[in-house]
Length: 421
Image (tube, rainbow, N blue to C red):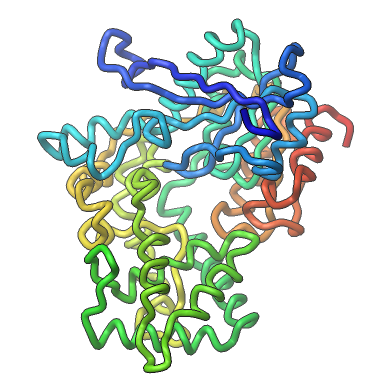
């Protein structure tokens, strides 16, 4: 029992492949959270759909995540570890190495997309809620899941709230990364404008890496391209400061990289806890429109300012590259399977555009005007093609606004969905 919250752990056995109910099964974990004073009350359920892919649900503590206290005023919350994450039969480098072949692993991983996660949620809802519909809060990738949910099982939903996560319904991986690189470039330049000395420091670190064999504590070589993936953090509200203070302790008095820096870089870029983020990233955009084919890597050639020799050195963002599966220990067991997933051309669609156009479930979405990860223009285009949708466009918050705003973003969305704002 958390002093701030009453919690109950739930575990559900679900089919690996929901089209084969008599086939292999996995376990899916979810944590029920309720205000201790309202444990016996009949409260509506709010399912939290975590960002990612590959991210486990937040672990509640006093006042955290920031939206939770507001939600618990009126709801019983379910924090779902999406399949393959956290305590839900996790997919890790160790489990991946046990598969007999890359094709078997790729076939297994194909069941970890949004359609399967939504099918899990529906099975859980029927068992946990006596068949009553529930509400959802989808952060980032959780918004992608929400649109799949509205496409596949709208009868299971009463209202939906999305924060920084309305996907382009027909956008290909190539469309997404053509838009992503300019946003990342602008964010890095904004970072350098705030902390001018960090541009020179990053260039000095890159020169050290280019001139020698620098190893991380686990043995991986630290290269400039791995260093640049630290830019993934820059789209969050505290991202500039996280990178700045990391760099602040990066070099010792002799100009060598510190153990503290190397240890933190390994943790931030190793995908030990969330390999599915890398493995499944581009599968988000596979909908039978051809292979994704390492779209982020292809698009990089169109942006010469991202060359490793360019000055200033530009960090990268939410992009996954083939070299990661050779050079990062936590991803190596997935290398051949990731290649097969990138080559796949027959991904089933994730969104039913006709059903979404006729949608009657209230959908309230926060679109962050300067979102580094999810293109605001694509989000607004989607909103125009989904019925019963109300959008709040804001530049007050970054991508993590729902957690950073202490409930204000969620409160605004609840008011929008209910017609109070």
